[in-house]
Amino acid sequence: PFPKDVPTVTLKKISLQNLLKNDEKESGELFNVLTNEGFFYLNLTSHELGRQFLDESNQLHHIAADVFNNVPMKDKAPPGHRRIDTDAFDSYICQSVDDNGEPDMAEFLNVSCWGLNHDENYYIPPWLRNQRELFRSFAANGNAIGQVILKTLERELHLYADELTNIHQPEDYSGGFVRLFRYPAPKDGKPHSTAPTPAHTDATSMTLLFNWQGGLQITKRQGQEREWLYIPPEPGHVIVNLGDTMLILSNGVLKSGRHRVVTPPGPQAEFHRYSVLTNLRPSNDTPMRALKSDMIPSGEDGEIVTAREWSLAK
Image 1 (cartoon, rainbow, N blue to C red):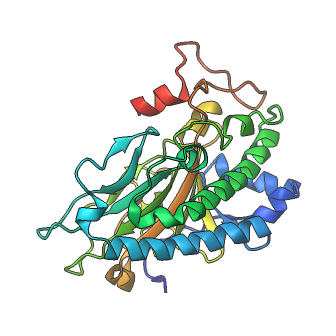
Image 2: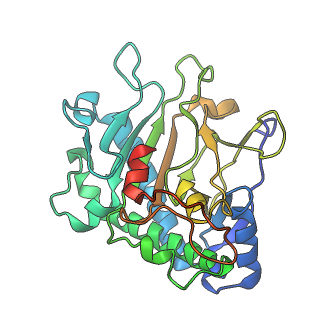
């Protein structure tokens, strides 16, 4: 259970089914959240698309627990295993190791969404190769759900139909990925002195995150002193946040939520922490500038870079 004696934030719950119905009240509540906090729970249980995405996240959770705990480091991280294909490292990454050469802060695996769909020779580590179809389906369902949110934002921002969805198509090369995490439990039982994932905003348009323990924190936007608040996991929901590309495309109307991951609170710290996510990024050739709308302030003139150029610079 999640501890009751730690500072938490209550995120707004948005219904996927209601967004699919173009429900005006639900759409307005979504827009209000994304122009303020930038984080919300999306209820997946009331629609088949959401239920399938939820089921796949649970499968990937179990796979992450299996491979991260049982595959030796020499197989997870063989010499020369890193390569850049999608503006982020594909394959396995270990943040740091202990005296025995085992991960002690965080380890994760990126799998390219584009590679899953369009490259038969795309490299997946041998210890995950038989899960290719699960990764592909999870990425596709995540994109489909993200498209529902983008369509809602098109209406709320008075954009042309498909103005956002057209630049977030799964067949476009964008650098989007599926990621599995493991945060090892501290061996001494004490919380890490530094955050395993430091405070940041995402270099994406949207992230859809599943986790089953505490540890994810966000900050209040008001006040001079930064207060970090835990986001408790919510069964049947995925945590959604916007990234910096939506901040740029909306010229600050939409918010990119700052967050970090720390050691889970209370007794949860005794267990390894797992997360599964996928994200949406604009196609690499998308100009990074404010879109035109009566809801979006005009952007400043200047050099326009592509989404790929911006991502590499960030």
